[in-house]
Amino acid sequence: MSTRAGQASYRDRTQEFLKVVENCKKSSSTVDGPSSSTAPYLEGPKSAASIQSEFSRRASQIGLGIHQTSQKLSKLAKLAKRTSVFDDPTIEIQELTSVIKKDITALNSAVVDLQLLCSLQNESGNLSRDTTNHSTTVVDNLKNRLMSTTKEFKEVLTMRTENLKVHESRRQLFSSSASKEAANPFLRQRPLVSKGSNESSAPPAPWENGSTSSSPLFPRRKSNGDPSSTQPLIPQQQQQQQQQEMVPLQDSYMQSRAEALQSVESTIHELSNIFTQLATMVSQQGELAIRIDENMDDTLANVEGAQGQLLKYLNSISSNRWLMIKIFFVLMFFLMIFLFFVA
Amino acid sequence: MRVTALVILNSAASSSSSPEAADPVVLANATDVSRFGYFQRFAAREFILFVARTVANRTPAGQRQSVQHEEYKVHSYNRHDLCALAFMDDHYPVRSAFALLNQILDEYQKAFGESWRGVKVDATQPWPYLTEALTKFQDPAEVDKLFKIQRDLDETKIILHKTIENLLDRGVKLDDLVEKSSDLSAASQMFYKQAKKTNQCCTML
Image: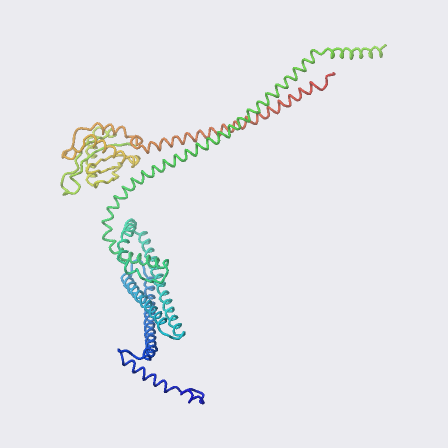
């Protein structure tokens, strides 16, 4: 047939097409039974097409889900932002949070299924490179969008917890008696509530690496702990108040003993410092004393030497005969000169 | 820093039963009411007992409590329904007060064992240990070893500071002496040189 239409600038393969369509109809009508060798081949493209349509249907569903979830998330963000101390739409926020979480988990599982389907399709059928590329690209795109949605969700939750913290601190500023109870029940409630919310918050995003998955768990758990803990907080406050008045007194007794011990220890440290300083100064001054001693020894030696010299001088003065003779000669000399001049 | 009274009560009956049940029963009592005038002493003693009963009634088991009442601080310690109270002024350190209560309770249990649990009427004989404890422990250092150690250490620190000042003075004086001795040695050296010069130079006059 191709040769027949060879002269024309185009190739008319309509007949081939009609035949293929007939064959497809035949093979689709025969559900069971050993099909001919062509049937699996024809079923290949047919099932590929069906798989492809299945794939695209699912992908479109997931895309729609992601879009709806992100809309709900923006609503949640608005609610969390405008929350004030007294007019807290806690219930709505909680509902919305749980709904969004469910949606995200469902979307997550759907995307995982889609990915499985895509990989199955890629390794089973002999599809063109473009189709495989297209399907992988679609799957990646959906994954990315879901990841960004989850990240936004996480941010909204952290913002919510920060707002709650700000409210707590403002509440503490204005009501000082609630301060003690706020700390303890906060810590006491968290392990109770975290157990309940553990299962629901376990698989938020399995493809995210460990660091980011632990942080959405933590603020999520904390945010679930906060709104639920503030309501049962109030009836428990009176019970805990009495206990905590006693407990701080016991604690303060023990604490004062501990403080006294610590002050004793620090005093002993200071004393040891003072003693070492004392020892240093004494050793320095010992050196000074040695210098003084040397100076005095020098002085003594000098003075003794000088005394010896003077004694020698005295001796030489007092007992030198030759000196006497010299003096006599000098006297005679002067006498001579005197007599010379006068006579 | 004065201790005005020490009271030991049995507060078993008052903890969980009906409110009109027995008040805590006084087991031992030592008061120092010498500050008041002669005619007020009896009233003061009654007042102290009444406040002691009230506070012991309100102290739960195993707890320590401090209540301010007019110018007295009342410290109470309830240990297994045996409650010890101390009336003292504000300057007495709280920790030493509780250490004192601990000691009194130990002594009481050593002296009387568990026989106090059955006592339903206020005991009238004075317990000599309590009266001498009242006089001995007017000074918190006696009862609280930590307090005593701290005080001794502070005194030692003061003494050491004085020592260091003396040492600094000594240092200044030693510096002075060094200067003077070096001057002296220079002068003696000049003296020696002069003597040598006069001896050697002109033997001929």
